[in-house]
Length: 122
Image (cartoon, rainbow, N blue to C red; front, side, top):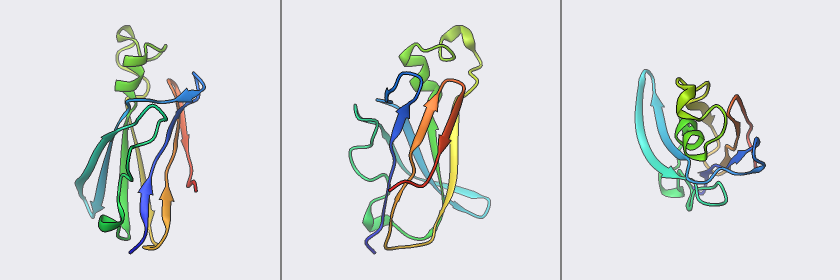
């Protein structure tokens, strides 16, 4: 197996990488969810290593959960201030499938306090 999984979070409201945003990766098996990794983004909005490295990479269904609320609160953005509880966006789950054990999967998140988007990147 040579595939691996990476992610990248960009703060579209501030036009910068989303640094120190907590991310958790789960593998989905039927109705069960098993935690595989937990990391924070670095200053470039990426994790320092693949969130699912080659030695753990297998086809299946996965879920990345981005703790947008922690990031938005820490950054002091509108929508993230304590007075805005509950936040419009707090946990952002992205469930996706990996079918090619040899490929690089990249799942970026474009985030703002009131919206987000994702896609399969390269």
